[in-house]
Image (tube, rainbow, N blue to C red; front, side, top):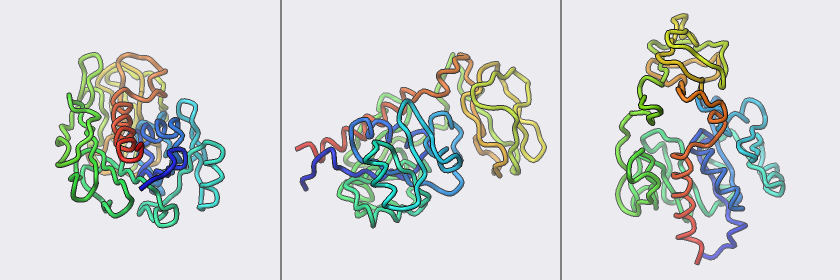
Length: 268
């Protein structure tokens, strides 16, 4: 199948942190990118997540702007402006209208929520839950290992370890999780400092305390209903506020794998 690369349409399922990094790179590469999302995204790394546009109408990440839209006509308008349309479409039904050359499942659910290899000429699954050569054409490794960003043409990605990326030698200590289910509330924001032992939020009235000193790099939106075990946020001991709004190296590596897979298929 032949297509001009600057007219290639990529539909990305999700507007979370990883999906946003992929969308950013592909938009910079002049592809026509559209993000689909749920009506209530649960991103915690909101400083670098285009899904914030679902709530706020618009979100900028490193110079690229995404805007919430409601129709295919609006999608084409934003492409002419080199912006990313994001539409509430959890079932990705927009693929039947846009007829994308590429579909990327970046939901990061650790299981396949319905993506099929018949969804587009090239279907890419990110991380665990997909089998290349069966339900998708390509899998991109997302685990923080030596295989990070590698494209897999047959088989599966590594299983998720559940271990956060180490910063300053700290992993699990950096993450905030819900000990109970209920209403998440906070008066803190991304980019603010937190001290060890400080309650940075509550869930069902119970305090969620930081284990370490650092900057709040990620934090769920206040007023969100969560289940027990939900990741609520992340503390970065480096204290660099700019990192809260910068795409992480891990995400750039994954995005590079997606770009490589697309060029392998279409740059002929």
